Amino acid sequence: MSDNSYDVIVVGVGGMGSAAAFELARRGRRVLGLEQFAVGHDRGSSHGHTRIIRQAYYEHPDYVPLVRRAFARWYDLEQRLGRHLLTECACLSVGAPDSELIQGVRLSARQHQLPVEDLSAADLRGRFPAFRFGEAYVGVLERSAGFLYVDECVRAHIDAARSAGATICDNEAVRTWRATAAGVEMETDRARYGAAKLVLTAGPWAPRLLADWGAPLRVMRQVVLWFGPRDAAAFRRDVFPIYIADTPDGYFYGLPMLDANGVKIAQHYGAPELAGPAEVDRTATAADERNVRRFLREHLPDADGPCNRRSVCIYTLTPDRHFILDVHPEHPNVAVAAGFSGHGFKFAPVVGEVMADLVETGRTAHPISRFRLTRFAARE
Image (cartoon, rainbow, N blue to C red; front, side, top):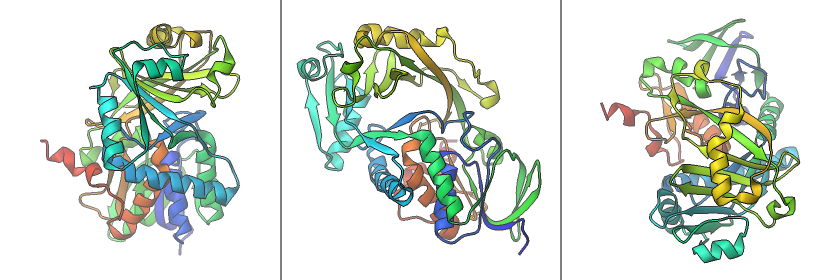
């Protein structure tokens, strides 16, 4: 076998690609992972300090079995490497009783028998006095939630993949790929490779690599901010939850104060859709604080302190904001995971399993019918 020939090539070794490379290597496949930047880079979506993980999934009940499996696989990865990756913390959803957020959380909880607690406006004020939400709001509290240390998670999957025999090459950009009678051929800025199978997990660069598929992907610039609170003790993890708030000004989410940077908060969506990552301004400025400051002053005034840190990341969006998990319509040996729309990182280990299943057998036991690429063709 040629040194440049593999069972599977994985393009993009961020959150999803690192998990896919690990899962395939764990199954005994000869795996090459190609990453155009340095491993653990900050140019895409899988970087930063933390990401929320939650089970009462307002986006749709179909996500719940996947996130349950993801919880188990994150714990497996912790055990395998002896590293702390996931911290449990209650998650509070706040919105009007008939809001998409509250209705969605309750629907998922009801369908999957998830334990949640309904909170009135008075309950919110009593239980979490840092918040200021009026009588028009209610809350739903779930305990089966927490946060992931993102950079550590990506490094853990890469280290586990390498330990299982995978080759991970960073700072090597893919130029082209094509299907052949034997599988796929890949040309990078360094070399040519061949493989029987291909997994594409290219994040914001997926629109370019999937152009021939007609995948309707766009990107969105997002800025995450950290503010110094007036009383740090009021935002400790034991007294202050992860939260998502559905307000007339949009969705906002945040975490407790975990380190000296302060309280993390960001607006979910609420920015223009762009064609690709080249259009994203990587510099965060004071102007990016405007909407978040308005939210803090109205609903979380004790966190309205100095901005200690700003970070730019990218969402890769599908039109319906649900994922793409599928095989190529013409090449069943090519699988793709894309369009995670700002809420996908938590699913990385189960997405790795799905990608491995799809390139090995063309099917998976995981429930992914909602995430088929063909749903977009049906709309045309």
